[in-house]
Length: 120
Length: 110
Image 1: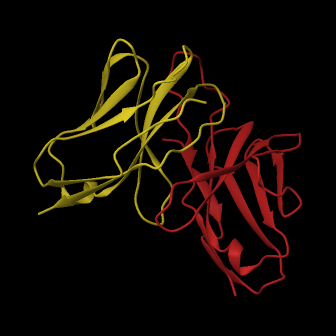
Image 2 (image 1 turned 45 degrees about the vertical axis):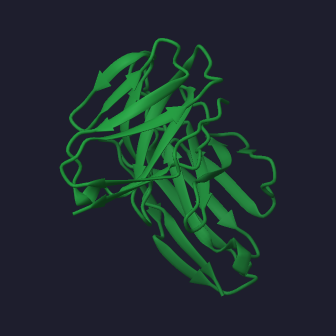
């Protein structure tokens, strides 16, 4: 099946620094990727939709200047947490849909393994 | 986007069949129903997807009544490794965003 990778899997940074998380679709192309964050014992919260070659679409309440998303190619989207603070500590997960999905077939989101961010 | 409602948690024993029902009263004509499984500190994993009636794969079955306002994920003969959170998602296919509900935390006991 299709594979989505994330790097790094775990990162610890100091308050005030920026952290970049990469999301790659390894064996398929994705014009659309999604970024989620998940706090302990809670559900996934959609942060933004990342569109290849255009600006990301952010969900209400998500600061676009704090969470910078770049979708530079059909296989790579990055999320940069700028000026990170302890409250940004969370589990960040990306997902992608296959560009070649055909109507009538199964349309599943392929999720990355997640990135655990800890801001000290 | 259609809102989904699931039981917060369920307990079961190994070898039993588990049925998790999801309510989605506002499902739209173009919406599909998809279920995902998530283990702690991992990304969700696709289980099954359907539009109407019954869908079965090697892992689970999905039952959808004619009015499509609910759906039931059926896991046959669960094992300890099926302990996870199960999410029901409703939305259009083809790249549209989907919103996760609270999910159902299934705990399988020996």
